[in-house]
Image 1: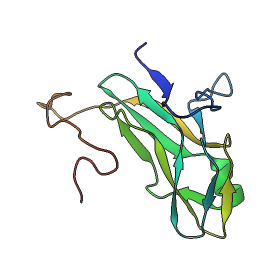
Image 2 (image 1 turned 90 degrees about the horizontal axis):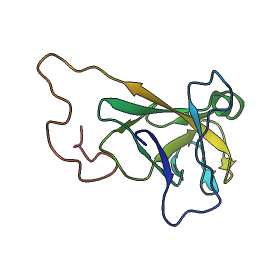
Image 3 (image 1 turned 90 degrees about the vertical axis):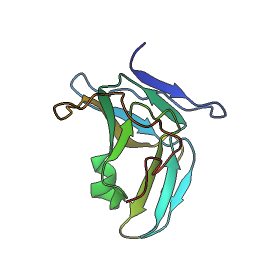
Image 4 (image 1 turned 45 degrees about the vertical axis):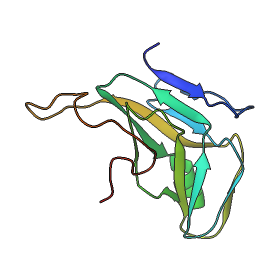
Length: 141
């Protein structure tokens, strides 16, 4: 397989992401654990998953719109960007803008979209430093 998701060792009772309708673009990601999201603080929600895909693609992670509209939740970084060389745990930084909220294990919380991307002339995919970590592993701002 060249593109997909895997359940990480140590996680059980979770589902691999699927598209819910014939024309859904995104794969629904579920919470792998119960997480209590405190108002206006970042809470990390584990998915228990990692992804794999070709080097000229990116996995973009968006919070499900129903959580944003009905429960006033957002992803702290707006859109999650998972690069092809990241083989670690997909963990979502979630913020409640208005009140506390409990995310329950198995709740569909985000959508992942695989997309091809372009580079500037002369740039080569796969040339550069090797990733060595997790959040912010390619350097701070």
